[in-house]
Length: 338
Image (cartoon, rainbow, N blue to C red; front, top):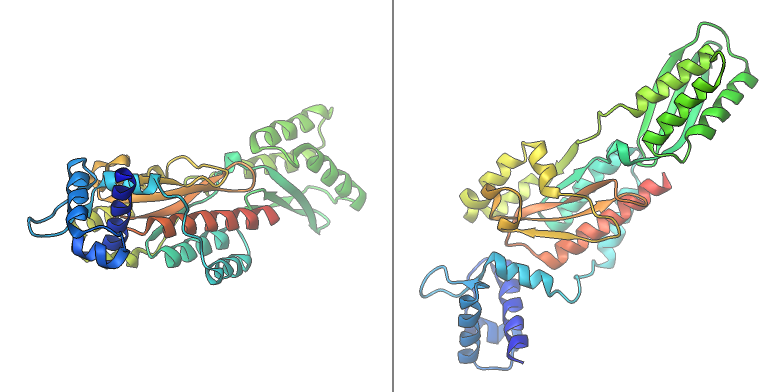
């Protein structure tokens, strides 16, 4: 019973501190949360929580604020993640459904995530090596010029022009299209490259047109321009944390300029809707010990990349976790539907 009550006290302090940005006292807890015990009992519970490292007292006469350990227990003991409202879910769906290509999906995701959480949103571009080939299209622009279009499971589209040294008949183009699709469609990038190269090796001698198309596709598949790329949005939200500028905001602003730092903050992508919360010193960088990261993986099937938010440890974890999970789910669906 006592442990349950102290957990309720900690939960109330976290919620009040996030909402008011002020240390929380026992009297305010009793008045606002209906804990059905006296302020003296609450003070004893707060003292015990402080002794165990879950709370700290900034000043002698002030109330308490959560420590990283307190936030950690709060997040770990969340019985339910605060659900998004129907209006929020509808806004996410409508906003993302209007995306026209992968870049648009990523940038829309960053914007909507920053708006929902009022934090800095970070979205990693899908990693090329984890994607599969959805389709290859060969379009005859002229009798001797082809447009080679590679469509990946991430929604990424690569286009290349191929100049031929002779005219290509329609039936020859159809056969070529069928053979490259049969070899590559549904395969992971690495396997598709092997299958396409085998296609050329299997022809004795290989058709110059086939060799050229395969060479073009393999080059497009090994193009790493979008690997390790990220999009960031909502930096202006950091203005809300002016009271902790030197400890939390300045290091985070510096980190936002370093792509490799942000990728490490997001961590490994998780599939299956699992949301990872790293609080304060749990993160990989000591200078960002006043920062929390809420992240998850996204992508159809296995996670292709990560998205999430970074911000000061004083954040609304239940709502933020719900928003991160929902946006990842919708982005995955948009990419899956192509």
